[in-house]
Length: 294
Image 1 (cartoon, rainbow, N blue to C red):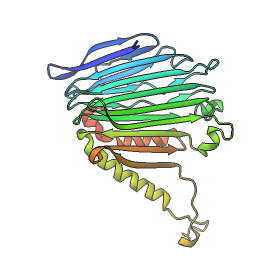
Image 2 (cartoon, one colour):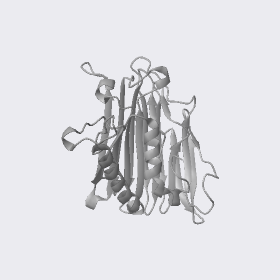
Image 3 (cartoon, one colour):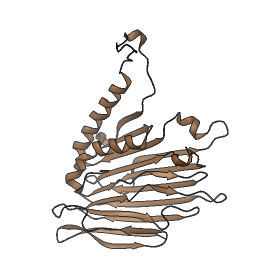
Image 4 (tube, rainbow, N blue to C red):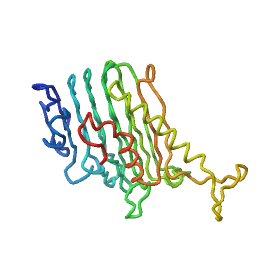
């Protein structure tokens, strides 16, 4: 039984929410003045009562994006997952169908799991050959101000994309669990954010190309920058010293003829990831009306 369902269709030539249903603990906000009137895009904000996901919550959403529509799914703040009671796990499931010549941008703030939290989410996207899709999926280490860093019990995030309803195009799962031999903190080696960005479809080809070039440049600069000594002189190649990069990213193609791009990120700060997303997804602004993560 869904806790939320939304249908977006063309009405008088404009992308319009024609069906909206939600029940506790989920709520949708669909503001009317997010974008300029000339921009054909619907913005949908998801939030939960109480400001976060409580232990044992189970949220299931269904989105149907009609042909030729543009929809943005986002949040007002980070998704907080509260402490687990006993062995209860909090769950979220989203299934979205994106029609012909349509664009869905899923651009939330990060997930932040509190100490001992247990959280699992799964997102399934069904696209056509001319659908376009952006997915940002990311998690921070926790509440730094409370001294919590990767202190939750486990986190699992699955993203599956199917082409023409049932052909697997992209299948991915991130799973973090406290281990008996090594904790998540030890395995992360100081990195505080893990993120993934998926860019797919004909409307986003220019962004795909730019992101690939930018990731290559960023990592080239970070990994090949020579060490500068105390006297300000660059040492020879034989004595170059590398420090841990504050931001690392990789980029690869997937699907037939490289129809999609996936970027994976590890960073020391949340702010650096916000900055990266804002810069790399700036090309979405003409399509969705607002600069993402501004």
